[in-house]
Amino acid sequence: MKDFTHERKRMVEQHLRARDISDEKVLSVMGHLARERFVSPASQFMAYNDFPIPIGKGQTISQPYMIALMTQMLDLQGDEKVLEIGTGSGYQAAILGKLAKKVITIEREKELVARARKNLLTQGLSNVKIVLGDGTEGYMYNAPFDRIIVTAGSEKVPRPLLDQLSIGGKMVIPLGGRALQHITLIEKKKIDGEIKIVEKKGIDCRFVPLRGKHAW
Ligand code: SAH
Image 1: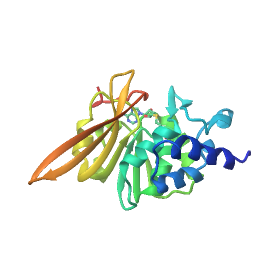
Image 2 (image 1 turned 120 degrees about the horizontal axis):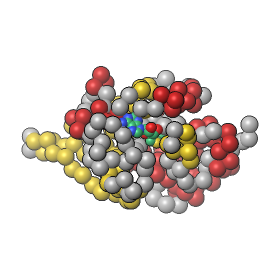
Image 3 (image 1 turned 30 degrees about the horizontal axis):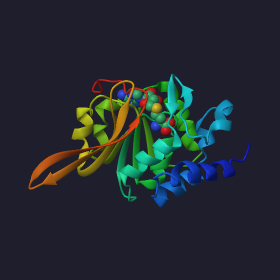
Image 4 (image 1 turned 30 degrees about the vertical axis):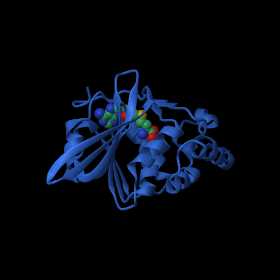
């Protein structure tokens, strides 16, 4: 198998650090994780370019910059329980697994779940659990979550996800229309005894649609 160390380093410097990714932990994890293992053998040559790559079932692994940005926005300290919606290849889940204590990731496509499980096995991560199902319902068995990341685009925040976010928790989700969304940071805060939801709109993005009961 080809060694991608050079490409990986270049991705981190050119596409992440040269832009606004400054979280050293995120840079270090992405600088070590073998992204080529999460795409098909035929796509490996482009694994480190800054664009999304098809992973089957009409889905894509997101571009490295978007993954780094969303991970940085989650502001992980290492002791969090994280929920990801949209496992896809498992690449984002692997990054989360290296930065947080426990990760539950939900994927609705059976075939992708099987492949992501295999991909994650190569990383020896025992703190990442992949669940087959509709992620817009959240995962009540492990709720509440300190962090939630949705890696597919939605018109609104699925209500169960808001309910399953801890007080003091953060969620990153692409919100908008089918063609264009904004990376959005949602924070659940307790202010003067009242629970408030604070929403901050970030940059434009284009994700595959979130499908399921509570997405559109
Ligand atoms: N995070 C992934 C990329 C995600 S692409 C990675 O690192 O590779 C978006 C994924 O969300 C697709 O695999 C799609 O099947 C999945 N998805 C869409 N709606 C979903 C839902 N309601 N529940 C779970 N997964 C969903």
